[in-house]
Structure formats: structure tokens, C-alpha cells
Image (tube, rainbow, N blue to C red; front, top):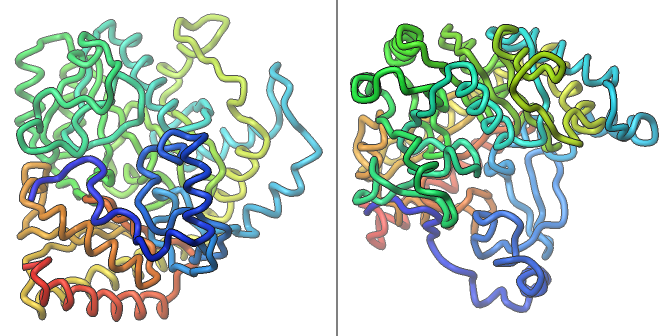
Length: 450
């Protein structure tokens, strides 16, 4: 009944081992560890993909899926969107990579980001969200002269050592020492403290225990890496006040929430301004790019001529990523109805799932915000990770597996979220809810869900 990292409902379907996808997976396993380039990409069937269009993807054997995985949220407008791909094609063969100076595209991107994100005066571009959070942590430590970092149990902020602990922890490891990887030095691991989301007292207790030693608090405004824990307004406001009073930097990790829930990120939704904001994923609709933004007083420490914090990266601000990000942001700015539509579709799915589990008598709680939804197999309310330890992770993963087998792609692992893109339609939602009713009724009948 407890969450576990990478808990999947089942391994591959033996009936599919003669397919092209299985064959490619077998070939990949000889050359790539586990046959994938990122550990959570292996979930059994479907093994490999051959294309995508709008809200749909096609596996290597021609099976078509309505995509709610959306590449962990990186697909915002839809797969192969001409809104983004056409400008990228036009950019190929123009500005490439120089490694010196700056390009017009980098300046245009910085203008877009600082205009969109309320707390941003300056920004830096990175190639990924992990790089952005690594830069944010380093900057916070430099600015405060302190060493400790606070994160929340269940929050994921990238693969680097400073934050690689306590995400989907088993109950016996939650809030204690739960590194995501071997190879992390003990003193690096111990420099990150763990608090409970939506529990301001747990954060305050750490500041009292380590006076004037905490450099920053880093948080996903909505911890989407464990589904969708929606913050209480008073929690976010209290965290802002507490970090300000304690002289610590407040970092909003909006790698997932940024540009997905609002053009200005979740900080625009709650009206609370962090000191630093990281972003990535959906900002370029699948092209690799990320970044960090904040006030001039902090960001100028990256100035190579007069600052003291290293900024380096050969591909930072590269042409295709910047072009894709500009095109995505320009579309979102010109079409605010994008948010109206995706929020409405997300609400329809959440309301529909709530009605279904209520009708079937399944103990479950539907959570989410905007176009993101999660179906926890636990009674509510669910506000923090302690509540998630009641979740039936096997039922959670089984629901996603059975939906995927019906042609609705949902990553079949415990606590993984689902996303609505700009390409989903009302008809897609209708079919999704119809399939979900069949799946949940089957789970109830065979005892997988209670």
C-alpha cells in the first residue's frame, strides 16, 4: 500500500515480444543501460514510439494512444505543433552555435520570460530543469553565505546531488535519509533538510533547529512529481513571510507548473512572489531548454565580469531551443484562451472521475489543477506526503496500465500525474471518461480497487 519509486503495475506483456517495439527495446538494452536514456522511461509495453501528432502518439507497432503522459509535461501545445516546429525549421541554417557573445534570439527570449514571470527581472538560459535548479541552489548559497537547503518530502528538483533525496519514499524512509542514487557524498546529502508540504510549522521547526544556517527553501508550488498536491494559500503566503524574516531565499521550482498553469507560472495564480524561479519543460513544447529568473540584485552575481557565481554552458540559449520557447510563449500570450480550455478540460476529467469512483464505491480522491489530474486510491483530504502514504500504489499503477492498454497513455507508475495539452478536445475527454469507467469497474470487480 506504500508508494515506491518506479512502482509499475506490470512488466511487459509476453504476447507482444514479437513486435517491432520489443525488438528495438532488446537492441537498445545491449547499448543503453536498461534500454532507455532515463530510468523512468521503461514501463514495459509500449516499448518504443515512432511518431506523434497533436494529442496522440503512435508506438513502433502502429498502436495509437491519446497521450496524457506528454513527456512528463514537456508537451504543452501538442505533439509536432506547427506553431513551434515551423519557426524552428525556419531557424535551421541561420544562426547556429558560436560560443562567444550573444544572439538576438537570446535577448528576445529573456524579454519574453521577464515580461511573463512576475518576479523576474533577469534570467539565464539552461538546457534542462535540473541545471536550472542546480544554478538556483548555488546562487542562494552564495547570496546568503549559508550551506543548508530545505526541500519538501515528495518534491523532485532534478538529478543533482543537492536535491536528489526524499521523493517517492517508502513510509519507513520518508522524512529520513532516502537518497535517490548511490554515489552521493554523505555531507552533501545531509546539507538538505526535509519538511512536510502544506505544513508551515515543519519548516519553522527547521529554521529554529538550524538558526542562520538555511540558505534557501526550494519547492514545487504544486508538487506534481507526486501527482498534484495543491498548496493552501496561507501556506504559500506564510512560507514567503518566514523565509523573508529568516533571511533565506525562496525558490519556486516551476519546471512543471511554469507556463502550464498560467503564462506567469503558479506564482501568478497565488500572487506570491519567490526570490528565484526555475522553469523548463512546457516552455518550448518538447525542445530542450530551461532557465532561472529572479531580481537583478541576485542574478547579477552570474555576471562573469563582476559577479562571483559561475555561469557556464556551451549550449545555453542555443538557437533551436530559444526559437521554440519564443514561439510557445508568443502563442500563449496571444491566445489566453489556451488556459481557459485546458483548465476546463482538466476540470471535466476531475469531476468525471470523482463521479465514477463515487458511483462505484471506490475509496479514491481526485486531485489536480488546471489541465493536470491524478486519481489517488486513498480517502481524502490529501494535502501532503503523509496523506499520500495511504495511497494504494498498486491500484494507482494498475489504473494507468489498464488505461494505457485501452489506448490512453498514462505512465503506469505510482503517483505519476496526467496532463491535458492544447490539442485535447471535449470528445477526447468523453472517450477518456468512458474508458475510465470500464477500467475502474473492472478493478472493483476483481478486487484491485476497493
